[in-house]
Length: 388
Image (tube, rainbow, N blue to C red; front, side, top):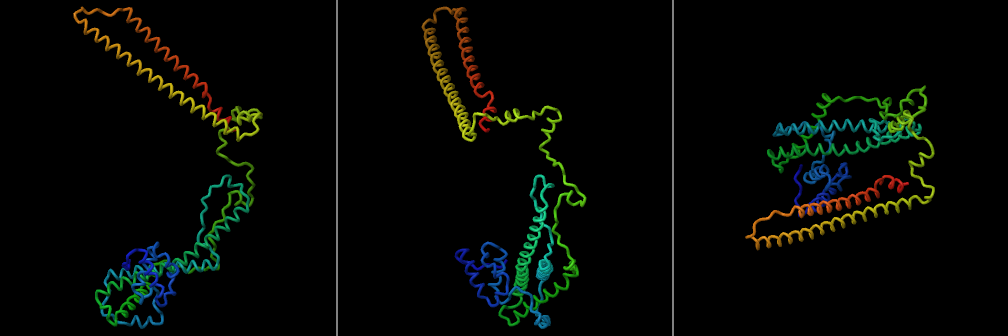
């Protein structure tokens, strides 16, 4: 890419380059003038505009045919390097390739011929029983879409051709600037000569390897496909009497097994229709709110009970520690006394009390679980009623 003019900010640089670009003589001949406003967002536009501003004498257009023989007859003092020749040939081959494609696009649009068929990736349920006017309208839309894409492509290719000439000229200028002074009178003659040679050589060589075709556009058929279901493609096709739906497998299985309840009461039961409910949306939201409120209250109640149980446990532990501390003090005062085994009745009494306390706690928890289970043993039915 050509070096860009240095300015305090990037935005100022683009504005300055664009302002200098529009005052270049004969600049209106270039397609790039329509897209100068994209200089700060499109690197391709920026590359072309910056090259033209830095080299306003050489516009990126094909050589003039009137002066071509004179230019080709010029005898240069120096020759281009092999790397430069490769760049020139690559850009000129690309130029003629896109020109050939652009020419085909223009002629196709003139004859209302679509060179491709746009694909519609829309999955339509029960596609085979759509009305016929749908397929006709979609085919027309695809035809129009293809022609519009071909038109905008042919216009954009003009930017490509100017880009290839810019890069060819840049390669020639960079090479010759090392061999000839830019102040030399024959400086411009060398550049024009090598550009014309590159253009003509590319034109001669490219079509010896490129598969160009001579298309008869009067007999050329549009490639837009008129999509139809299979039964419509057959002249003797009959309208499908049944539609296939993969979601019916489950209910078909119930029908085959004779277990499908196909009657009014079963439908009412399935839909949870209540004769007393007249305003279903209001009942729906009030019930849901009530259910959520109960769940929240019970959750808070369970948290409160767990907190209370935790507090009782901590209090019991304090009393237990105090009891052991008093007992250790008592044992310290009576060390001289012989050790006596604990009373068996006291141990039994302690175990009995502990077991009774554990059973009472477990019984309370079971009652809570039963109560909670009773409230939500069938939450699905409650939600079903709320959504009727």
